[in-house]
Each structure stands twice: as structure tokens, then as C-alpha cells.
Image (tube, rainbow over all chains, first blue to last red; front, top):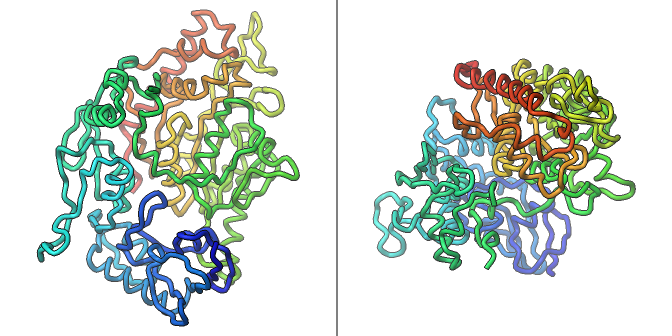
Length: 235
Length: 316
């Protein structure tokens, strides 16, 4: 346990915890777009910025990526913090003006938001889907394109590796802007422009999961596919 | 190897792990209502104030000096959950304006059972929805007054036997059908009305999240299986919920600004009511002719709903 103070409130935080989670536990409102409790932190949106004092100097830091340390002081509501968050939100808003999730956050943080008819649902590169695919599903079908030194000047985007995708839909579930769309029509599921055939439950005859997903589960757990052909209602 | 353990779809792993309605309450075995409440609280999150009418959920969760609630909670009388919920919303607004509380969005939520919604709490609910408060009302519908010993309410389905509508030779249980409260709420011109069932947890949580986001009144009718009052086996709660939905006796749908949308796919052939009725002791007295009557009523209600789904358009 380490002793830290958030907005003057002294708390004992668990070692290795991040400042964002500790602040959330104190019911302090910190805006985020790329944070999820069950995934590793990413620090893409910079909206969770706070002021942190370690070794006598105040500095701005993304709270999700800041690990608590003994004697740390945190301010979540100072003028500097507000200014920094507003800037981060403004930059996101200018880049994706038609995305509702961005508009909501920007408006809340004091950016002037102009009314619009468009609902563009852009990808803001928050990395929620890539992290979900890697850490939760372990299918690794989603990756960022052009990483590292080879990164080109071309706009970065998410690379979709078609054969690896099992069509589970977790990326659509976790997506904060609605960019990842999933549709179901007559026994087929469409996601990332790939069409998946849905398996039919042996018992009730309803479509319940993509065939690829069942094959993937069979591969990773060693259970034959024939044992998985019953839906959750009938099991 | 246990198949069920390994077979997990992945999205549920991303659901909030924190319990805001904690374990250690006193609900019966197999209670569908408390399951619904747990999922609702997960979806609502911490910034919530709950006003809860008298009923099962209040009795089992708040036996003095214990509480199962991890959010601010007010127990109110049977009839005024919605009125208190709207008052909480107005109070929060005033405190925020005066700078007495931090400026963040806190949702006011009212929760009541079917008795507290469709019978006793009805005028308060109607008033709160009509005034357009920024609040969400949840009806946890277990189809009778279970907590006081299974008395009929106007949400009790046709021909169900309860202690105050017993099955006899002449009158076979409840003489009328279920009051369609979601429909009455749509008539209040509120932005969001939905029906949900904890047997479909992700669907329920998505609807709750949607209602939370709406800055205005929302109503969610949650079908909550009660094995004790329905004289059913306590291990069949989830199955019964699914059957009620699959037979069409409790269809899952949502109404956004007047536009009806089914959230569950129905094929032309729905599951027959017989499958659902025979699992419950409260329908034990029904003979095939009675079951046909129940089926006819369900078909009629379903047809009415499908007509609205096919023809309704958003208000604006």
C-alpha cells in the first residue's frame, strides 16, 4: 500500500494501481474515451490528464498511465488540467467533427460545438478493439497499421486480418464511437466487411454463433465442435 | 472436460466486474428479479441515486442494519417511487446549480415491482413521466404481489392462479389479461420505452445504458421470473424467462421516439404457450381448451405489437 493524496484527500492506494482508477473509486469524474477496466491502459485520448506532483515538481500526465507512488499528490480539477483536457478534446473534435461520442465529450469540456446533421462514426484510434482482440479474445485479427520505424506518412488506421477474425463481435461491443458495425441478416453476420455463417443450434434451430468462433473455441480448448453446437438457451 | 466452462463468448468478459448490488441479500433461490437488479446496477454505474418502492427488492436488500446497496438508496412508500425519483432529480439539479455538489452527471432512478408500478404507484409514475423529469423508471415485473404472499395484481397474466384469484371450477384464476404498461408509457410521449428480461443479460444491459444516456424520462419494463410465486422449479428461472420471450407472451422490444423495434428475432412459428405454461404450478389447472384461450390472447397481443413494429415511424 502507498499513501497518495487526490485533491487533498488522503488515501491508501494499492501498489501498481493507476491514478485514474483510484480517482474513479473516489467518485471523481474524469472523462476518458480509450480506458477500459479489463484492458491494459493505452493513453491514446489524453482526456484523463491530471496534475501530478512527484519529487517536488508538478507536471501534467495521463492518469490512466500514471502508476501510484508513495507521497504522490494529484489534482484532477486545476485550471491547468481543465485547459489541457479542453485542448485534447478540441483537437479530437476538429479531426472528427461528426462523431457523436467526441461531440459529447468536447461539449462537456467547454469546446464550442457547432450543430451538425452528419453522424459519421469515425475511428478515433483509441485501440479498444485491438486490445480486446488481443487480450480478451486472443484472436489477434485487429492491429494498427504501419507501426514503429516503418510508419509511413499515410494516415494510421486499423488493419483487419481477415483469416484470423472469428466474428465474435467483441470489437463492436467495446467500440466507443460506433465505428465498428455489426449486422445480422438471415443466418449471416457481417462485421468488418466479412460475412460469417452462423451455426444453428442442434436443439432449437436458432442461429447462435459464427461457425468460425466455434471452431476457434474448439481449437483453443480441445473440445470437439460437435459438443459446442447447442446454444445458451438449450444447454 | 466441461463444455460449458470452456464455451464463453468474449464480449461478456468486458462487463463491469464491480458489484453495486452486492451479495448477501435475502432473495429466494432462483430469484430472477434480483438478477435483473444486479445487471441493471452494473449497467447504470456508480453515479446513480436509487429510489425504491416497497416490495420484494426492498425487503430482501435492506434488513436493518444491513444493506446490499453500494449506491445512495432511498426506500419510499409503495405508491411514490416515481415521485421521489423525480424529486431527487430536481434536488440534484438545484444542488449542482448552487455549487454544493461536484458538477457531474448523476442519474436518478426509481425502481418498483409490478404492484408498485401498475397498481399502487401508477399515478405517481404517470405524473413523473408527464412532467418530463430526467429519470429512468424500472418496473421489475414478477406478475403478482409476491412479497406479501402472491396476491394478484393487474400485471398477473390471464388464468394464473394466485391466492386472491384462486383456480376453481367456474373461474379459472385471473380473469383478465396483463395490463400493457409499456404501451401506456409510449402514450406519455417519452423518448425511450423498452421491455427486457434478465435471461438476455447483454440485451438488458444495453437497454439500461441507452436509458441512462437519454436526458429525459425513460421506462424499462423488466420481466422477472419468480419461482416461488409461480410454483416453478428454482433452477428453471432463466429457462422460463427465455420461454416467455420465445413464445411471444413477453416480447422484447424498444420504442425510441415512437418508433417500435423488436430486439429479438421472431420467426413465423413462435414456441407454443403450452411449453411455457406446463413448467409452472400456477397454470396447473388449465386443460387444453384453456391453453388454447391463453394462446389466442398471446397471439392477439403479439399481432397488435407486430402491427406497430411494421407501421410506426419516429415522431420527428
